[in-house]
Length: 316
Image 1 (cartoon, one colour):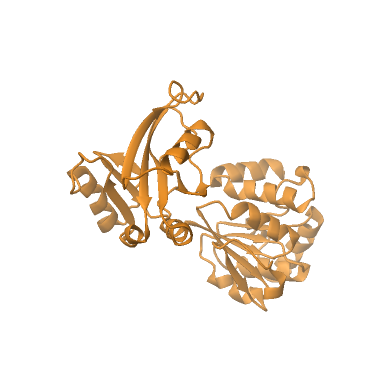
Image 2: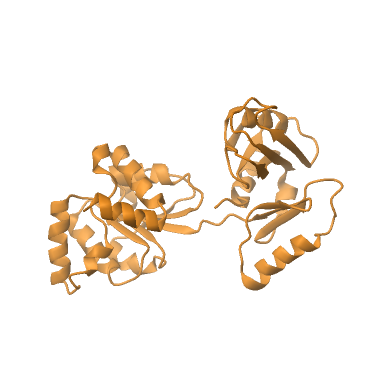
C-alpha cells in the first residue's frame, strides 16, 4: 500500500534543501502507477517513481522550476505524452522546505490542491478523517472534492531475515526498496553484517538468535538461512511454538526431511512442520545468491491464497 512517506521527505529536505514531491492524485483508465505513488525531485536528482517514461521525465523537469507551494495538472497519457497506457493522470506537485516538513503532523495528510478549493475540509473529507480517528480505519489515498488525502506511510508487513550471509544479503538488497515491508535482519554478530546497508533495515545482532524469536510480531514472514543447520533447526523449533504468517528455510528436500523427523522428536506433532516451507524460492532459477533471492522475494510477495496454491502445486 502506498502512503505519504514523511520520513523520506524529511531526509531528502535535510540533504538537498527544497524538494518537490510529485504524487499521482487521480487516475482514469490505465496508468503506469497507482494513486499515491510519488517521487521526490530536487535540483540535482530525484528518488522514487511515478512510473517512469515521458510522464515522469516531464513531471521531474517541471518540478525543478516550480515556485508555487502547490500545483496540479492532468495529463492524457496518449494524446499529450505519446504513451500507450491509454488513460489520464492527475499529478499534485508540492514544494517542501524544512518549515513545511515540520508542519506535517498526524497519521493522515489531507490538504486542498487547488487555490479555489475550500480551505477547511469539506464534509466528505471530514467524514473520512472522522472514520480514521474513531474507528482506526486507514483510508486509501484519494482526491476528493479538491482535497488530496494520504495516510502517512507505515510499513505493514514485518519480515525477519535470519542470516547475513551471501543469500541473506541478496534477499535484503531486493526487499529493502519495497515500501510496505518492515525488515528486521538477525545474525549472531555485528561482524557478520555488511558495513553499509539500507537505512530502513533494522539490524539485530543476537549471540543466540533463538532468544529473540518471540519478539517478532504474529504476522511476521520469517526467512531462515543462517550459516548453521543446527541454528536453522533451532529457529524452526522456536517458531513452531508461536504464530507467524510465513516461515521458510533455505535448503534441499533432503535437509527438510531430516528436519521434519527432528522436529517431531523435539515434541511437535507430525503435522506441525507443514507450517514451514522448505525449500524456499524457485530452485529452477539457479543457485546463485541473487537467483535464490529473486525466487524468495516472489514467494513472499504473492498474496496468501495464491502463495498457498503455488506451494501446493510446486512442491507436490
